[in-house]
Length: 269
Image (tube, rainbow, N blue to C red):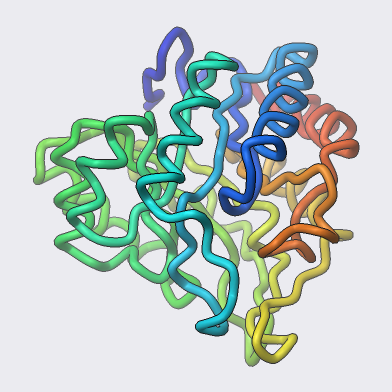
């Protein structure tokens, strides 16, 4: 089932990509990324949604960079939405944030570690916005059905389901691409998060590591497995990013990666 967003349908004939910096750092970085990715997606005929988090509550250290907070972060996201005429997806972490973030965001994202939080899912559902539930690293794909029901029974059928890898021992994630067809059976578009899937949680002590070399191949595999949407964290210079740098794509590499993925998507469609 496709999900309507503005003048396009997520999960229909055209690939949809959710992409942008991990967290709100500065308007300049957000503008450079939004402008570049919107141009790339327009050139390739891809539906584009700008992604950025006003707060990243799940950090390895209390001193890790989290963003600018909900007030300033949403102010910046609203500017990007207006200046570049793009839909917005951002994370929420507590039930009270749902209605506030919904004033700006077109898609409310439920972080993987919070995906089972009933109050959070219900509050998000009641906004009427599209809800993107990220599958916890600790869940089997079949278990996502109960989370779908929480949103549906709260009156909302605008749902996306995201796979972002599963915990494999210590400090590592693996991607089991069976999760994509399994979750598609629930009747909603499935997203593959290609950048968080290469994370190495806690591998750098007080920060999370990652290996962006494997982002393109995982993204292509997800397309071949039938994913409807791709999610990427993208930054003009990930090595200088304030969080999640090791797994983010360079903005300059987006065209090639997106182009390769679109070719597979189009063949399957």
